[in-house]
Amino acid sequence: MPVADRSHRLSRRTFLLAALAVAAGCSKTTSTTPGDPQTGGSTPELVLPAEVTTPTSAPGPVRSVGMIGDSITFRSKPALTSVFSAKGIADVTIDAEVSRRIQVGNGKSEPLNGEQVLTNLLKVGLKPDVWVFALGTNDVNNVDADAYPALIAAMLAMPPADTPVVWVDVYRPAALAQTKIFNTALRETTARRPNTTVASWYALASDKSKKLLASDDLHPNEAGEVAFAALVGAAVAATG
Image (cartoon, rainbow, N blue to C red; front, side):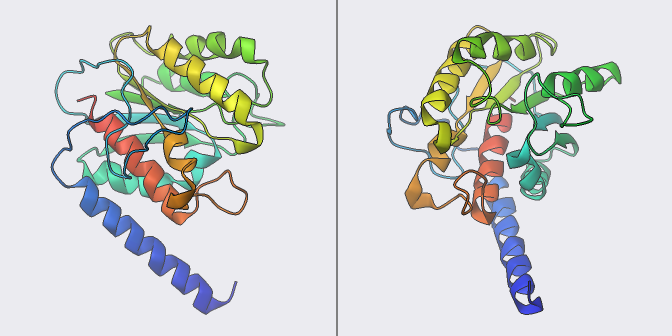
């Protein structure tokens, strides 16, 4: 990449992250419920709180976050760090790997799966105020749809029952039917666990007018990384 092009990209990223930090530092926005992302209803603005499928009851403000994700989270780490910092959340652990799945992956020939990462973090005593899971994108086209509920429920059962969980839903247009089934299963399963929230990346990413995806129509571009981080940050803040 020519030096001038790279400087332009870095300058634009710096601008986006600065704008995100300013937005995140604003007063808390009243929670709204967007239209059904599976049926093409209205979508939330980039800094609006995420869709809440189950009311939360976490005591006090959020001070720490543990997040496990795949390549979407990996690409968005700078933006996530910025928005968490702006919200006063200083203790943040983000473990994200390209192609990560929920249960499949031994960490050798393929990325360590999300369940095992969570197991390891719990074993070393990580006790965040909120857990965030951004997983499923690499499972929707590799797992039979009938197995989605059990797959989701198994991971939801791992954190302490009184710890809030935010799970970011998925958008994989190349497997759109499976994506919709997974997101429906995600909402139905999380509804059975107290203190659990679904943040709808689908609602944002599927809105072509927002232009949040890279040329592969899957991963976020720079604006998408900022939007993803704002979505997660709003959902996390709403648990406090």
